[in-house]
Length: 422
Ligand code: UD1
Image 1 (tube, rainbow, N blue to C red):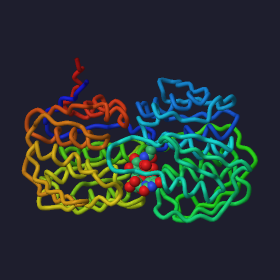
Image 2: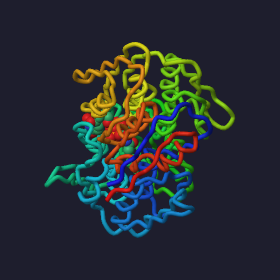
Image 3: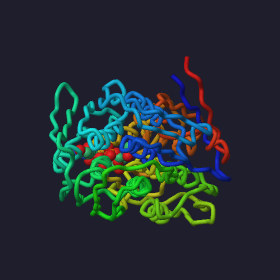
Image 4: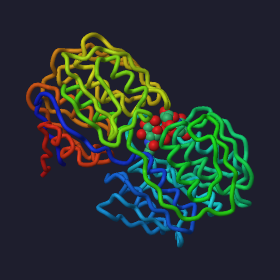
C-alpha cells in the first residue's frame, strides 16, 4: 500500500488550481439516470470515488466515458439494463445511494444496497426513505437491500425533513423532477452542491425553485432531456488548501476559489489571524506574522462551518496560540485523526463530540495512519508544519477525494512525495 512522506519545510508560495467538486459530481452523475438523452459533465475531478460511481452506473447499463484526461464525463442512460445497485460497489462509497431517487423516478422500481463509505458514524438512510415514501414509494429492507417501488409512479407532496441531510435532499429532489404534480421539500439542505445539482436538472428541463434556501419546490415534468453542465468548484478541496499557507506560513492563491463557497470557514481563518482575499482568479490566503490564534469551531450544515473541514482545521489549531474547542455536530466518531495528531506532539482531549486543542509551538514528524478521507489530508497538513519527517500510511482514503495532492502541494514549495507500496 502506498504512503506519503512529508518533510516540514517552511513557508509556501505560489498557486494551486482547485478541481471540480467531488460531492457535486457524485450527485450530478446519477442525474443521468433520469433521462434517455446524454448528460455531459465538464470540470470533473479525477478521483477514485468518481471511478466507483462510473462503475456503478455502468453496472446499471449506462454508458459512461471519461474524456479529456477525465475532466469530461459523457454519460447516456438510454439503454439501462438493471435497477439494482449491488453491495459490492455500494459498500465502497456511501454516495452510491444517490441512484435510488433517479431509478425510482424513471422506472418505478429500484433495489439499492445499504451503503458503506467513510467509517465516521452510523449514517443511516431513514431520511431518504421517509422523503421517497412521502412521494408515494413503498420501500422495504430485505437482506441489506432497500427495495423501492412506485407502481403508479411518484406523486408530488409536501414533506419536511427532520434534519437537513445533503444526500436525502439530493435523492428527493431528483425523484420529484419526474413525479406527478408539485413537491415542496421543507428543511432542505442548502449546500452549494445542491444548488449545482438543481442548475443541472434545470438545464435538463426540470422545473425547480428555491435551491440554496431551506424550501425547494419541484414541479414534476413528464421527461427530462440531455444537457452539458460544468461542475462547481470543490469548496472542501479549496478550504483544505487554504489551510496550507495558514499552517506553514507564506502566501498561496487558490485558483477558481470563491468566497461565497467558504464564507464561514474564511471568517474563522480571519479570526485566527490569516488573511483571505478574493482576487480575480481565486482566493489569496496569507499568514505572514507569527503563530495563528486559537478559535472555536462548531460544525453545522451549510452555511455553517463544514464538517468536511473539521479535521484539517484541527491540524491548524494544534499549532495555534491558546486553546480551542472544536465541536462536531454532524457525525459521531469523527475525531479519529486526533490520536494520530497526538502522535505528532499535539495536545488534544476528546470528550464525546468535543475536542479541546491546546496549541503547541511545533509538531514533530511521526509515522501516522489515515483513517478517513478528510483525516488523511489533515495529517499531511500537520506533517508540512512539523519538524522532521511524517509518513502517512493508508493513503487510498486520500485518492477518494484529492486529485494530484502531491503535485499540487509540491508546486507551492512543500516537501512531499508518494512512496509506492510493496
Ligand atoms: C454529504 C457529503 C459528505 C459530508 C456530509 C455533511 C457527499 C457525497 N457527501 O454526505 O462529504 O460530510 O454531506 O456535510 O455529498 N443522516 C441520517 N439519516 C439519513 C441521512 C443522514 O440520520 O437518512 C445523518 C447522518 O448519519 C449524518 C448526518 O445526517 O449524521 C448528515 O448526513 P448527510 O447530510 O446525509 O450526509 P451525506 O449526504 O451522507
